[in-house]
Each structure stands twice: as structure tokens, then as C-alpha cells.
Length: 272
Image (tube, rainbow, N blue to C red; front, side, top):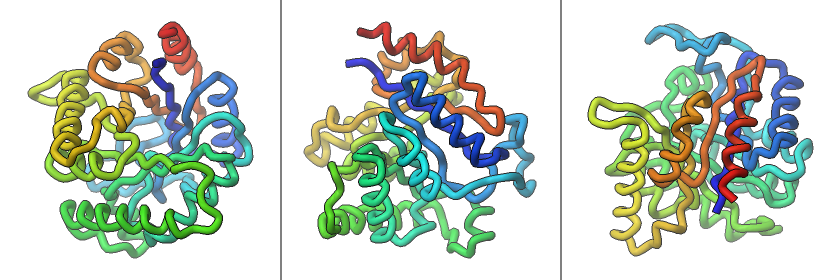
């Protein structure tokens, strides 16, 4: 099976027309998925560099799910979704209904990406309780149970079983929750002191596989979406060997230079 190519349009520092145009261009190129993210402030500076620790982040930004509703109308073939929804920002029943609505608008192309949340400035500015990391993970697990139950009650029902994507690499809790609820897992090819980026992917995949076996689920039921530096096309085949089924390529605003995506799409198509 060919790997999927996902374009991760970071909705920061740009006018909405620029974001929408980038989504249309990514679809025309042949991307399989287009993701945005769920934040209220930019995560990176306009030049792509990071703010110093503790420095306040400012810049143009737009809300995640209203944007996805627009993409659902503007596009026609690509899957769309958040990478990822912050569980803390919306009541889980409401989130299920929002995803179901975008599912219908798009004709069955939405992915419900979700995570426990981490960006404290968002929480503080919008009045959400930040709590601890483990508390947010416990809340995520509770919310996923509620989302699954609410989906069963919605009228009309979603056009398909909306795939749930869970982002995060915590081996004791996040990947256990992923094994239980996710159709797609999203992680990053991140280098650590112990492992190269590719080795990290292979290791996390093995941990997830083991959690699946522990709860009695077939690991093959969960797709593996892996983020990697868009310039590292040289690592493409290694990613597949490590277990990736989808490659996620981040593109920053406002310029949204999609030229490197073409090379990845050509690589995908070469896989027959």
C-alpha cells in the first residue's frame, strides 16, 4: 500500500485567504490529507524560529474548527482534520457534534485529531484550567469515551466512522489510550540522546503495538502518521521501514512554500 502524504498547514502569521489558497494548492498537488492545528496564538515566529522560553507569542492566528468547516467546502478530495484538537478547549459532546457536522459538509473526509493539550498561554488567555500533564491525559481518556458514545446518538449519524487520530508519544499513558481509541497515531521522527529520529519512530511503534496486544487489539488497525522535517526526503524509505504509513510535512505561514511537497508526492507515487 502506498504511504499517504499529509500537508500540515500551520495557521499562523497569515491572512485567511493565504491559508485557504495553500489548502487548495496542496489538494491540487495530490496531497492525501491536509491538517491544521488547534491553538489561539502562533507557536513559531514568522521566520519559523522559536520564541525564547517564557516569551509571549503574538501574531495573526485563526480558530481551528471553523477553518476546517471552510476547508470542507473549498476542497473536494483530501481528508482534513486538526493536528490536533486540544481536548481542554471544548466539551466532548460538542466536539463530537462539530466533527460530525464537518464530516457531512466534507462528504466524509474529516479526521478527528485530538490530544491532551500543552500550550499554557492558550489556557491562560482563554480561561481554561491548565492543571498537570497527567490530569490533562486523564481528562483526554474520559473525553474520548464520551465522544465515542455521543457519536452513536447523533442524528443524522456521521457519513462514515470518523477516524480518531491521537497525537503524542508518552509510552505509559498516551500510547495506551491510543491503542484503545485511535484509528491513527501521530508522532514525530525526533532525535533523542538514545535514538535517531528513525529509531524513535520504530521504538514508539513497538510500544504502541505492545499496548494493542495487551488490550487484545490488532495493531494493524492503527495507521501511523509521522511528522518529519520536510527537507529530509533522504529519510523517506527509512520512515516506512520504521512503520510509518503516513508522512506529515509541516509548512509555515504566511508564505506556505509547498514546492518541497512535490518531491514527497513523487516518492509516494513511486511506491506503486
